[in-house]
Image: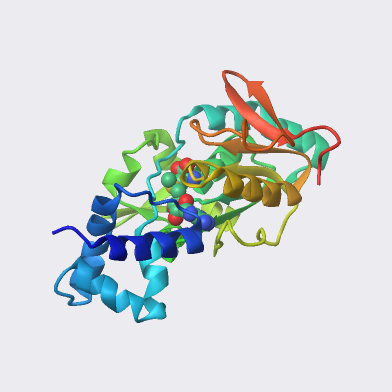
Amino acid sequence: MTIAPDSFDFVATLVRRRSAIQLDSGKEYLVESRLAPLARSAGAADVESYIRSVRANVTLHDKVVEALTTNETSWFRDRHPFTVLKDTVIPDAITRRGKHLKVWSAACSSGQEPYSIAMTIAEHFPDVRASIVATDLSEEVLAKGRSGQYSQLEVNRGLPAPMLVRHFERKGAFFEANERLRSMVSFRRHNLLDAPPLGGPYDVVFLRNVLIYFDVATKRDVMRRVRSVLAPGGWVFLGAAESTIGVDDIWERVPVAGGALYRPREGKAA
Ligand SMILES: C[S@@+](CC[C@H](N)C(=O)[O-])C[C@H]1O[C@@H](n2cnc3c(N)ncnc32)[C@H](O)[C@@H]1O
């Protein structure tokens, strides 16, 4: 069955208001497939009647928004950013800030990104004390990140075997991030539409593969909030398909080793 246009509009508006994720018409199939498990576990006859109950019950709204987020992630995603982090960004931050660094992994999904940052630091800068604040809108992915536990299938997605051996312990069917990694990363709920998390200024911000879901005005506002907590000389990583070009001219795109980093233009720092 297909959901009624009115039901789709209700969900799309709710999701846009609470997360800024744009669900354009044509995404009815996505709403249906993401809400079907929620409808089933609520005992609703179908997605349409589940949406009717959501309309009448605000306590269900967060769940619906979370279900419409895309949490796709992997270890050392795209590889290149982690090479640049190791070769350029961390050495540069140490020169400016000493050996206590702060990193914000925004929209971190289930933790593969912040733990990949933690492994990079633990392996190559063992005497650096790093605190990595890992945030996301979805409580479900944050719980997974906090648990630090990943299945064989999940570790197969980009975690090199020697790193698995060095940084994880076997716990039954799962591999669990060791104490050292877990002590470097703290997971917090945070909506990119809100004021940035406390604990900055941050020397490095990872904001990858989330701006693509937002309209231009939201991208600009999110990036301005990032700038407000970026340490002087700090760097921002965006996803491979993302850029500040056409979004806001306060950002400079700096090509580095075949990819790009972002920083506020001279004279336009917060
Ligand atoms: C595709 S994942 C990217 C994960 C990771 N950064 C990476 O590149 O592998 C996008 C994440 O953005 C989160 N997200 C979407 N809208 C958000 C918002 N308004 N505030 C915070 N997180 C949001 C989703 O919950 C999801 O986990």
